[in-house]
Image (tube, rainbow over all chains, first blue to last red; front, side, top):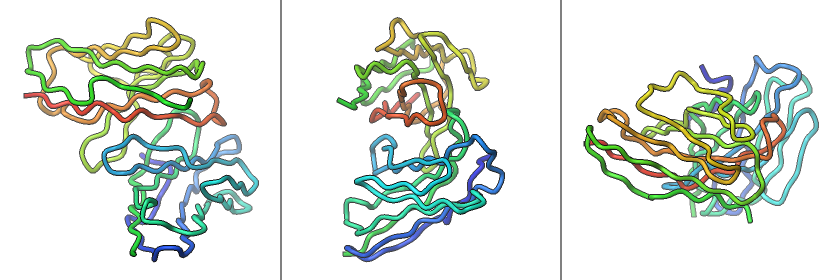
Length: 107
Length: 114
């Protein structure tokens, strides 16, 4: 069974921020939190990852709850190209993908 | 260069055929992975290679046979497949089998078994 739960789908308006939540209540102390996204007809693409502290990169920000049982991927200004399925993975390098969140961006 | 290439893009094979999928990376990564993704489902891990040795087989049927001839190349040999094996087969690589390393995925090979 997947170790993470995410909403099935979310919608956002273009150029607005998007907050994608993920619950990983069974996370252990050494488990990392990774986020990937998969555009139609492509392989998953790495977005960001973290262990305990919040992380920023050119694509997104990752906010990790203090108890590490949940995290939020933040896209600061959604574009039409961000429409994808976003997967949150917690654990080791043996990835167990959950069902992900399908993000729809409205023009 | 963060590219993982996979060939062919599409493959149609009969249940008695033998075919191979190929994956290549030139990032110096020492871990490589095969995933299977059925339509509208998330990817599922099949195999993990670490330093060219098979380290994980997620109870995959023997009709799927992986091979890692060198650190840049990963093959998946297919034999006597079933129609339910039709899926997108994804290859990925990472610097090593460490949780903090991200994985880079190829575009996949879409396999249809007739």
